[in-house]
Amino acid sequence: MGLESESNDTLRLMNKRVTVEQGVLAVHLFPRAGIGTVGFFMVGYPEETMVR
Image (cartoon, rainbow, N blue to C red):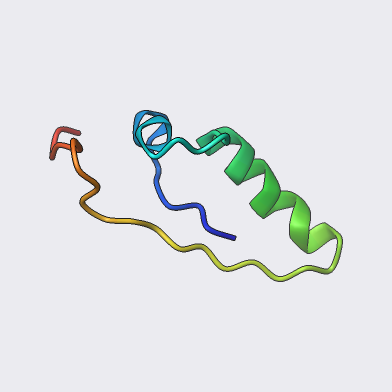
């Protein structure tokens, strides 16, 4: 599962058709179906800032 970012803004920049909330839901639902999960995140995508 390529979650790729914790920011919906960054996901939009990446033209992903998924939200952070959908990723969180999938991570919670997969184990219930007996599917293990692993997450991968991109760090430093262009136009991201260090603001928190």
